[in-house]
Image (cartoon, rainbow, N blue to C red; front, side):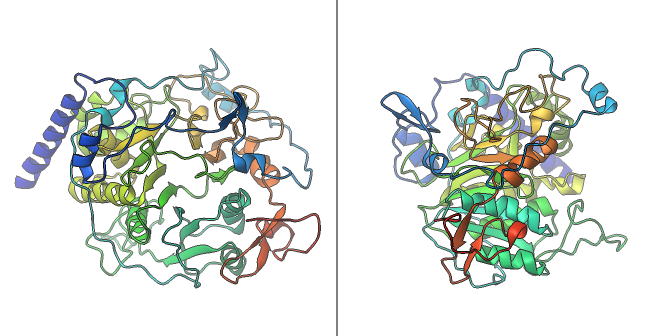
Length: 487
Protein backbone atom coordinates (compact mmCIF):
# COMPACT_ATOMS: atom_id res chain seq x y z
CA UNK A 1 0.00 0.00 0.00
CA UNK A 2 2.83 2.39 0.84
CA UNK A 3 4.46 1.79 -2.55
CA UNK A 4 1.15 2.43 -4.34
CA UNK A 5 0.60 5.60 -2.36
CA UNK A 6 4.11 6.81 -3.13
CA UNK A 7 3.65 6.08 -6.83
CA UNK A 8 0.33 7.92 -6.88
CA UNK A 9 1.89 10.89 -5.10
CA UNK A 10 4.75 10.99 -7.58
CA UNK A 11 2.33 10.88 -10.51
CA UNK A 12 0.21 13.62 -8.98
CA UNK A 13 3.30 15.75 -8.44
CA UNK A 14 4.27 15.25 -12.10
CA UNK A 15 0.80 16.33 -13.21
CA UNK A 16 0.98 19.46 -11.05
CA UNK A 17 4.43 20.24 -12.39
CA UNK A 18 3.15 19.88 -15.93
CA UNK A 19 0.14 22.11 -15.25
CA UNK A 20 2.42 24.82 -13.87
CA UNK A 21 4.68 24.60 -16.92
CA UNK A 22 1.67 24.81 -19.26
CA UNK A 23 0.49 28.08 -17.76
CA UNK A 24 1.58 31.58 -18.76
CA UNK A 25 4.23 31.30 -21.44
CA UNK A 26 7.06 33.82 -21.75
CA UNK A 27 8.37 35.25 -25.02
CA UNK A 28 9.82 32.63 -27.38
CA UNK A 29 13.51 31.89 -26.99
CA UNK A 30 15.88 29.05 -27.84
CA UNK A 31 18.35 29.90 -25.12
CA UNK A 32 18.02 30.65 -21.43
CA UNK A 33 19.12 33.85 -19.70
CA UNK A 34 22.57 33.59 -18.17
CA UNK A 35 21.20 33.60 -14.64
CA UNK A 36 18.77 30.74 -15.32
CA UNK A 37 21.32 28.44 -16.98
CA UNK A 38 24.03 29.21 -14.47
CA UNK A 39 21.76 28.27 -11.60
CA UNK A 40 20.39 25.23 -13.41
CA UNK A 41 23.61 23.33 -13.91
CA UNK A 42 26.34 25.38 -12.30
CA UNK A 43 27.92 26.09 -15.67
CA UNK A 44 29.40 29.23 -17.15
CA UNK A 45 26.84 31.75 -18.35
CA UNK A 46 26.00 31.09 -22.02
CA UNK A 47 25.62 33.63 -24.76
CA UNK A 48 22.61 33.86 -27.10
CA UNK A 49 23.11 32.03 -30.39
CA UNK A 50 23.88 34.16 -33.42
CA UNK A 51 20.94 33.88 -35.79
CA UNK A 52 19.40 30.48 -36.37
CA UNK A 53 20.04 27.86 -33.72
CA UNK A 54 20.52 25.21 -36.39
CA UNK A 55 22.28 26.60 -39.47
CA UNK A 56 22.13 24.00 -42.22
CA UNK A 57 24.03 25.78 -44.97
CA UNK A 58 25.94 28.98 -45.42
CA UNK A 59 25.03 32.10 -47.36
CA UNK A 60 27.80 33.45 -49.57
CA UNK A 61 26.97 36.89 -50.90
CA UNK A 62 23.29 36.24 -50.16
CA UNK A 63 23.34 32.99 -52.17
CA UNK A 64 22.84 29.52 -50.67
CA UNK A 65 26.00 27.43 -50.52
CA UNK A 66 26.08 23.73 -49.69
CA UNK A 67 27.64 22.51 -46.43
CA UNK A 68 31.24 21.31 -46.87
CA UNK A 69 30.59 17.57 -46.83
CA UNK A 70 27.79 18.01 -49.36
CA UNK A 71 29.98 20.04 -51.68
CA UNK A 72 32.87 17.55 -51.34
CA UNK A 73 30.82 14.36 -51.41
CA UNK A 74 32.25 13.08 -54.68
CA UNK A 75 30.38 11.23 -57.39
CA UNK A 76 27.11 9.73 -56.31
CA UNK A 77 26.09 6.28 -57.53
CA UNK A 78 29.65 5.41 -58.66
CA UNK A 79 28.53 2.17 -60.33
CA UNK A 80 25.74 3.97 -62.23
CA UNK A 81 23.05 1.57 -61.10
CA UNK A 82 19.68 2.53 -62.59
CA UNK A 83 16.96 3.67 -60.22
CA UNK A 84 14.39 0.87 -59.92
CA UNK A 85 10.76 1.78 -60.62
CA UNK A 86 8.49 2.04 -57.61
CA UNK A 87 6.56 -1.13 -56.98
CA UNK A 88 2.78 -0.74 -57.22
CA UNK A 89 1.15 -0.79 -53.80
CA UNK A 90 -1.06 -3.73 -52.96
CA UNK A 91 -4.82 -3.31 -52.80
CA UNK A 92 -4.79 -3.99 -49.08
CA UNK A 93 -2.15 -1.34 -48.53
CA UNK A 94 -4.11 1.27 -50.45
CA UNK A 95 -7.36 0.39 -48.67
CA UNK A 96 -5.69 0.82 -45.30
CA UNK A 97 -4.56 4.32 -46.25
CA UNK A 98 -7.58 5.31 -48.30
CA UNK A 99 -8.41 8.34 -46.15
CA UNK A 100 -4.96 9.91 -46.28
CA UNK A 101 -2.88 8.51 -49.13
CA UNK A 102 -1.95 11.38 -51.44
CA UNK A 103 -4.89 13.50 -50.36
CA UNK A 104 -5.11 17.08 -49.16
CA UNK A 105 -2.16 19.45 -49.29
CA UNK A 106 1.46 18.43 -48.89
CA UNK A 107 2.74 20.12 -45.74
CA UNK A 108 6.15 19.14 -44.49
CA UNK A 109 6.12 21.00 -41.17
CA UNK A 110 4.87 24.06 -39.27
CA UNK A 111 6.27 26.47 -36.65
CA UNK A 112 6.43 25.15 -33.09
CA UNK A 113 4.21 27.13 -30.66
CA UNK A 114 5.74 28.27 -27.38
CA UNK A 115 3.37 26.05 -25.41
CA UNK A 116 5.31 23.06 -26.76
CA UNK A 117 8.65 24.39 -25.50
CA UNK A 118 8.86 23.28 -21.87
CA UNK A 119 12.43 24.55 -21.59
CA UNK A 120 10.97 28.07 -21.45
CA UNK A 121 9.41 27.46 -18.03
CA UNK A 122 11.23 24.38 -16.65
CA UNK A 123 12.67 24.77 -13.18
CA UNK A 124 16.47 24.67 -12.86
CA UNK A 125 18.08 21.72 -11.09
CA UNK A 126 21.60 20.42 -10.39
CA UNK A 127 23.34 18.37 -13.06
CA UNK A 128 22.61 14.65 -12.81
CA UNK A 129 25.72 12.49 -12.44
CA UNK A 130 24.85 8.83 -12.12
CA UNK A 131 27.97 6.63 -11.73
CA UNK A 132 28.55 4.43 -14.80
CA UNK A 133 28.90 0.68 -14.98
CA UNK A 134 32.29 -0.76 -15.90
CA UNK A 135 32.85 -1.66 -19.55
CA UNK A 136 34.23 -4.79 -21.17
CA UNK A 137 37.42 -4.47 -23.16
CA UNK A 138 36.77 -3.58 -26.82
CA UNK A 139 37.05 -6.42 -29.34
CA UNK A 140 40.19 -4.83 -30.82
CA UNK A 141 42.56 -2.08 -29.63
CA UNK A 142 41.03 1.06 -31.16
CA UNK A 143 41.29 3.79 -28.50
CA UNK A 144 38.79 6.53 -27.77
CA UNK A 145 39.81 10.08 -28.63
CA UNK A 146 38.58 11.90 -25.48
CA UNK A 147 38.45 15.29 -27.23
CA UNK A 148 36.60 14.06 -30.34
CA UNK A 149 32.93 14.10 -31.25
CA UNK A 150 31.38 10.64 -31.10
CA UNK A 151 28.42 8.69 -32.48
CA UNK A 152 27.06 5.97 -30.20
CA UNK A 153 24.72 3.09 -31.07
CA UNK A 154 23.59 -0.38 -30.07
CA UNK A 155 24.40 -2.71 -33.00
CA UNK A 156 24.05 -6.27 -31.76
CA UNK A 157 23.47 -9.21 -34.12
CA UNK A 158 23.34 -7.35 -37.42
CA UNK A 159 24.53 -8.34 -40.91
CA UNK A 160 27.52 -6.98 -42.78
CA UNK A 161 25.17 -5.01 -45.05
CA UNK A 162 23.72 -3.22 -42.01
CA UNK A 163 27.19 -2.27 -40.77
CA UNK A 164 28.16 -1.00 -44.22
CA UNK A 165 24.99 1.09 -44.54
CA UNK A 166 25.58 2.82 -41.21
CA UNK A 167 29.36 2.96 -40.80
CA UNK A 168 30.27 3.07 -44.48
CA UNK A 169 27.89 5.93 -45.31
CA UNK A 170 29.16 7.81 -42.25
CA UNK A 171 32.86 7.47 -43.13
CA UNK A 172 32.11 8.44 -46.72
CA UNK A 173 30.92 11.88 -45.52
CA UNK A 174 34.46 12.59 -44.26
CA UNK A 175 33.49 12.21 -40.59
CA UNK A 176 36.68 11.60 -38.57
CA UNK A 177 35.31 11.36 -35.03
CA UNK A 178 34.74 8.27 -32.91
CA UNK A 179 32.15 5.61 -33.76
CA UNK A 180 31.27 3.55 -30.68
CA UNK A 181 29.09 0.44 -31.04
CA UNK A 182 27.84 -2.28 -28.75
CA UNK A 183 28.12 -5.53 -30.72
CA UNK A 184 27.85 -9.25 -30.26
CA UNK A 185 30.96 -11.01 -28.99
CA UNK A 186 30.34 -13.68 -31.68
CA UNK A 187 30.39 -11.30 -34.64
CA UNK A 188 31.11 -12.88 -38.03
CA UNK A 189 34.54 -12.41 -39.57
CA UNK A 190 33.51 -10.09 -42.42
CA UNK A 191 31.73 -7.70 -40.09
CA UNK A 192 34.63 -7.76 -37.66
CA UNK A 193 37.22 -6.96 -40.35
CA UNK A 194 35.09 -4.17 -41.79
CA UNK A 195 34.39 -2.44 -38.46
CA UNK A 196 38.02 -2.72 -37.42
CA UNK A 197 39.15 -1.18 -40.71
CA UNK A 198 36.69 1.71 -40.23
CA UNK A 199 38.18 2.47 -36.76
CA UNK A 200 34.99 1.51 -34.95
CA UNK A 201 35.34 1.06 -31.19
CA UNK A 202 33.34 -2.13 -30.64
CA UNK A 203 32.30 -3.27 -27.16
CA UNK A 204 31.03 -6.85 -26.82
CA UNK A 205 27.85 -7.22 -24.78
CA UNK A 206 26.01 -10.34 -23.69
CA UNK A 207 22.37 -10.62 -22.68
CA UNK A 208 20.52 -13.32 -20.80
CA UNK A 209 16.84 -12.77 -21.49
CA UNK A 210 15.44 -15.97 -20.02
CA UNK A 211 11.98 -15.47 -18.60
CA UNK A 212 12.40 -15.24 -14.83
CA UNK A 213 9.19 -17.20 -14.13
CA UNK A 214 9.29 -19.97 -16.71
CA UNK A 215 12.95 -20.13 -17.68
CA UNK A 216 11.87 -19.84 -21.33
CA UNK A 217 14.23 -17.95 -23.62
CA UNK A 218 12.68 -14.81 -25.09
CA UNK A 219 13.64 -12.61 -28.03
CA UNK A 220 16.30 -10.19 -26.83
CA UNK A 221 14.50 -7.22 -28.37
CA UNK A 222 11.08 -8.15 -27.00
CA UNK A 223 12.05 -9.23 -23.51
CA UNK A 224 11.02 -7.05 -20.60
CA UNK A 225 13.92 -8.17 -18.42
CA UNK A 226 17.47 -9.09 -19.43
CA UNK A 227 20.54 -9.69 -17.30
CA UNK A 228 23.52 -7.99 -18.87
CA UNK A 229 26.09 -6.91 -16.25
CA UNK A 230 27.54 -8.47 -13.10
CA UNK A 231 27.05 -5.15 -11.29
CA UNK A 232 23.44 -4.58 -12.37
CA UNK A 233 20.90 -3.66 -9.71
CA UNK A 234 17.85 -4.76 -11.75
CA UNK A 235 17.31 -6.68 -15.01
CA UNK A 236 16.19 -4.36 -17.81
CA UNK A 237 14.87 -4.49 -21.40
CA UNK A 238 17.35 -3.97 -24.20
CA UNK A 239 15.96 -0.51 -25.04
CA UNK A 240 16.93 0.64 -21.53
CA UNK A 241 20.22 -1.24 -21.28
CA UNK A 242 21.55 0.79 -24.18
CA UNK A 243 21.17 3.95 -22.06
CA UNK A 244 23.42 2.38 -19.42
CA UNK A 245 26.01 1.93 -22.18
CA UNK A 246 25.54 5.51 -23.44
CA UNK A 247 26.17 6.79 -19.92
CA UNK A 248 29.32 4.69 -19.48
CA UNK A 249 30.66 5.81 -22.86
CA UNK A 250 29.86 9.48 -22.24
CA UNK A 251 32.12 9.50 -19.18
CA UNK A 252 35.07 8.64 -21.47
CA UNK A 253 34.91 11.99 -23.30
CA UNK A 254 35.82 15.57 -22.49
CA UNK A 255 33.50 18.50 -21.86
CA UNK A 256 34.23 19.74 -25.39
CA UNK A 257 32.91 16.57 -27.06
CA UNK A 258 29.53 16.46 -28.72
CA UNK A 259 27.76 13.11 -28.72
CA UNK A 260 25.07 11.76 -31.03
CA UNK A 261 22.84 8.82 -30.09
CA UNK A 262 21.27 6.92 -33.00
CA UNK A 263 19.24 3.84 -33.75
CA UNK A 264 21.43 1.63 -35.88
CA UNK A 265 19.63 -0.53 -38.44
CA UNK A 266 17.36 2.16 -39.96
CA UNK A 267 19.84 5.06 -40.18
CA UNK A 268 22.18 6.29 -42.91
CA UNK A 269 24.26 9.42 -43.49
CA UNK A 270 24.48 11.89 -46.37
CA UNK A 271 26.59 14.58 -44.65
CA UNK A 272 28.81 14.93 -41.60
CA UNK A 273 26.20 15.42 -38.84
CA UNK A 274 28.47 17.65 -36.77
CA UNK A 275 29.63 20.15 -39.41
CA UNK A 276 26.63 22.48 -39.08
CA UNK A 277 25.47 21.46 -35.62
CA UNK A 278 24.75 24.25 -33.18
CA UNK A 279 23.09 23.20 -29.97
CA UNK A 280 21.88 26.76 -29.37
CA UNK A 281 24.25 28.12 -26.72
CA UNK A 282 27.83 28.29 -28.03
CA UNK A 283 30.40 27.54 -25.35
CA UNK A 284 27.91 26.12 -22.85
CA UNK A 285 29.06 22.62 -21.81
CA UNK A 286 25.53 21.61 -20.79
CA UNK A 287 23.27 21.20 -23.82
CA UNK A 288 20.78 18.68 -25.19
CA UNK A 289 18.98 18.59 -28.54
CA UNK A 290 16.05 16.23 -29.11
CA UNK A 291 14.41 15.32 -32.43
CA UNK A 292 10.70 15.57 -33.23
CA UNK A 293 8.89 13.19 -35.53
CA UNK A 294 6.41 14.46 -38.15
CA UNK A 295 5.19 17.69 -36.53
CA UNK A 296 2.43 18.92 -36.60
CA UNK A 297 0.70 15.73 -37.74
CA UNK A 298 2.04 13.04 -35.46
CA UNK A 299 0.94 13.76 -31.89
CA UNK A 300 0.34 11.80 -28.73
CA UNK A 301 -3.40 11.74 -29.43
CA UNK A 302 -3.16 9.98 -32.81
CA UNK A 303 -0.28 7.65 -32.06
CA UNK A 304 -1.52 4.62 -30.10
CA UNK A 305 2.02 3.49 -29.33
CA UNK A 306 3.33 6.69 -27.76
CA UNK A 307 0.12 7.55 -25.94
CA UNK A 308 -0.08 3.95 -24.73
CA UNK A 309 3.43 4.06 -23.26
CA UNK A 310 2.65 7.27 -21.36
CA UNK A 311 -0.77 6.08 -20.20
CA UNK A 312 0.47 2.67 -19.08
CA UNK A 313 3.31 4.09 -17.03
CA UNK A 314 2.20 7.50 -15.73
CA UNK A 315 -1.61 7.22 -15.52
CA UNK A 316 -4.45 8.30 -17.78
CA UNK A 317 -4.89 11.79 -16.29
CA UNK A 318 -1.32 12.68 -17.21
CA UNK A 319 -1.77 11.25 -20.71
CA UNK A 320 -4.78 13.53 -21.25
CA UNK A 321 -2.66 16.58 -20.55
CA UNK A 322 -0.31 15.54 -23.38
CA UNK A 323 -3.04 14.83 -25.95
CA UNK A 324 -1.93 17.27 -28.63
CA UNK A 325 1.77 17.25 -27.91
CA UNK A 326 4.36 16.39 -30.56
CA UNK A 327 6.25 13.10 -30.37
CA UNK A 328 9.96 13.01 -29.61
CA UNK A 329 12.06 10.18 -31.01
CA UNK A 330 14.26 8.27 -28.54
CA UNK A 331 16.32 6.89 -31.43
CA UNK A 332 18.21 10.11 -32.17
CA UNK A 333 19.43 12.98 -30.00
CA UNK A 334 22.50 15.13 -29.48
CA UNK A 335 24.18 16.40 -26.34
CA UNK A 336 27.44 17.74 -25.05
CA UNK A 337 29.33 15.32 -22.81
CA UNK A 338 27.85 16.82 -19.64
CA UNK A 339 24.45 17.08 -21.30
CA UNK A 340 24.52 13.38 -22.15
CA UNK A 341 25.54 12.38 -18.63
CA UNK A 342 22.73 14.52 -17.22
CA UNK A 343 20.06 13.21 -19.61
CA UNK A 344 20.98 9.55 -19.20
CA UNK A 345 21.13 10.00 -15.43
CA UNK A 346 17.65 11.51 -15.37
CA UNK A 347 16.26 8.78 -17.63
CA UNK A 348 17.83 5.89 -15.74
CA UNK A 349 16.73 7.29 -12.39
CA UNK A 350 13.17 7.50 -13.71
CA UNK A 351 13.45 3.90 -14.93
CA UNK A 352 14.13 2.84 -11.34
CA UNK A 353 11.24 4.95 -10.11
CA UNK A 354 8.50 4.34 -12.69
CA UNK A 355 9.52 0.75 -13.63
CA UNK A 356 7.64 0.92 -16.94
CA UNK A 357 9.05 -2.45 -18.02
CA UNK A 358 7.29 -4.04 -15.04
CA UNK A 359 4.05 -2.64 -16.50
CA UNK A 360 4.60 -4.24 -19.89
CA UNK A 361 6.40 -1.29 -21.55
CA UNK A 362 9.94 -2.17 -22.73
CA UNK A 363 10.34 1.02 -24.82
CA UNK A 364 12.50 3.99 -23.85
CA UNK A 365 10.54 6.53 -25.92
CA UNK A 366 7.93 7.05 -23.21
CA UNK A 367 10.68 8.11 -20.80
CA UNK A 368 12.17 10.65 -23.24
CA UNK A 369 8.78 12.25 -23.92
CA UNK A 370 7.72 12.22 -20.27
CA UNK A 371 10.93 13.80 -19.00
CA UNK A 372 10.90 16.54 -21.64
CA UNK A 373 7.23 17.49 -21.39
CA UNK A 374 7.17 17.69 -17.58
CA UNK A 375 10.24 19.94 -17.58
CA UNK A 376 12.73 17.44 -16.19
CA UNK A 377 15.21 18.30 -18.97
CA UNK A 378 15.40 22.07 -18.38
CA UNK A 379 18.18 22.73 -20.88
CA UNK A 380 16.92 20.54 -23.74
CA UNK A 381 15.56 21.96 -26.98
CA UNK A 382 13.93 20.14 -29.89
CA UNK A 383 14.40 20.31 -33.66
CA UNK A 384 11.64 19.87 -36.22
CA UNK A 385 11.84 17.11 -38.83
CA UNK A 386 13.49 18.37 -41.98
CA UNK A 387 14.76 21.57 -40.38
CA UNK A 388 17.66 20.16 -38.39
CA UNK A 389 20.34 17.49 -38.52
CA UNK A 390 18.25 14.31 -38.28
CA UNK A 391 15.41 13.77 -40.76
CA UNK A 392 13.12 11.16 -39.19
CA UNK A 393 10.95 10.20 -42.14
CA UNK A 394 9.04 7.25 -40.67
CA UNK A 395 5.85 9.10 -39.76
CA UNK A 396 5.47 10.32 -43.34
CA UNK A 397 4.24 6.76 -43.89
CA UNK A 398 2.06 6.70 -40.76
CA UNK A 399 -1.65 5.93 -41.15
CA UNK A 400 -2.92 7.10 -37.76
CA UNK A 401 -2.10 10.80 -37.58
CA UNK A 402 -4.50 12.02 -40.28
CA UNK A 403 -2.02 14.09 -42.26
CA UNK A 404 -1.35 13.42 -45.93
CA UNK A 405 0.98 10.49 -46.54
CA UNK A 406 2.57 9.09 -49.66
CA UNK A 407 5.85 8.36 -51.43
CA UNK A 408 8.81 10.58 -50.54
CA UNK A 409 9.67 11.16 -54.20
CA UNK A 410 6.37 11.68 -56.02
CA UNK A 411 4.21 13.03 -53.18
CA UNK A 412 6.39 14.82 -50.62
CA UNK A 413 9.05 15.50 -53.27
CA UNK A 414 11.96 15.40 -50.80
CA UNK A 415 14.15 13.07 -52.91
CA UNK A 416 16.19 14.93 -55.52
CA UNK A 417 17.09 13.80 -59.02
CA UNK A 418 20.26 12.04 -57.79
CA UNK A 419 18.41 10.11 -55.11
CA UNK A 420 19.37 12.09 -51.97
CA UNK A 421 16.84 12.79 -49.21
CA UNK A 422 16.48 16.55 -48.80
CA UNK A 423 15.66 18.89 -45.93
CA UNK A 424 12.57 21.06 -46.13
CA UNK A 425 14.50 23.80 -47.96
CA UNK A 426 14.86 21.33 -50.87
CA UNK A 427 18.53 22.34 -51.22
CA UNK A 428 20.34 20.83 -48.27
CA UNK A 429 20.83 17.08 -48.10
CA UNK A 430 19.68 15.72 -44.78
CA UNK A 431 22.76 14.85 -42.75
CA UNK A 432 21.12 11.87 -41.04
CA UNK A 433 18.12 9.95 -42.41
CA UNK A 434 16.34 7.91 -39.75
CA UNK A 435 13.59 5.29 -40.14
CA UNK A 436 14.38 4.93 -43.83
CA UNK A 437 13.18 1.33 -43.86
CA UNK A 438 9.55 2.56 -43.72
CA UNK A 439 10.20 3.57 -47.33
CA UNK A 440 12.44 0.63 -48.19
CA UNK A 441 11.30 0.29 -51.82
CA UNK A 442 12.15 3.95 -52.43
CA UNK A 443 15.33 4.28 -50.39
CA UNK A 444 17.25 1.01 -50.69
CA UNK A 445 18.64 2.29 -54.01
CA UNK A 446 19.72 5.52 -52.25
CA UNK A 447 21.57 3.79 -49.44
CA UNK A 448 23.02 0.91 -51.48
CA UNK A 449 23.79 2.65 -54.80
CA UNK A 450 23.72 6.46 -54.51
CA UNK A 451 25.70 6.45 -51.26
CA UNK A 452 27.98 3.55 -52.19
CA UNK A 453 31.49 4.50 -51.19
CA UNK A 454 33.87 5.26 -54.04
CA UNK A 455 36.88 5.87 -51.83
CA UNK A 456 39.44 4.33 -49.51
CA UNK A 457 39.54 4.89 -45.77
CA UNK A 458 42.93 4.50 -44.11
CA UNK A 459 42.72 3.44 -40.47
CA UNK A 460 44.39 5.82 -38.03
CA UNK A 461 45.25 2.87 -35.84
CA UNK A 462 47.12 0.59 -38.23
CA UNK A 463 44.18 -1.49 -39.46
CA UNK A 464 44.97 -0.90 -43.14
CA UNK A 465 43.30 0.87 -46.06
CA UNK A 466 39.87 -0.43 -46.96
CA UNK A 467 36.84 0.52 -49.03
CA UNK A 468 33.91 1.67 -46.90
CA UNK A 469 31.68 -0.43 -49.18
CA UNK A 470 33.78 -3.53 -48.63
CA UNK A 471 31.06 -6.16 -48.73
CA UNK A 472 30.28 -5.21 -52.33
CA UNK A 473 33.62 -5.31 -54.13
CA UNK A 474 36.29 -6.55 -51.76
CA UNK A 475 37.66 -4.78 -48.74
CA UNK A 476 41.20 -4.08 -49.86
CA UNK A 477 41.47 -0.83 -51.81
CA UNK A 478 43.43 -0.80 -55.03
CA UNK A 479 45.68 2.12 -55.80
CA UNK A 480 44.43 4.00 -58.80
CA UNK A 481 42.85 7.22 -60.04
CA UNK A 482 39.28 5.94 -59.67
CA UNK A 483 39.39 5.56 -55.90
CA UNK A 484 39.32 8.65 -53.70
CA UNK A 485 41.28 8.79 -50.46
CA UNK A 486 38.85 9.62 -47.68
CA UNK A 487 39.78 11.65 -44.59
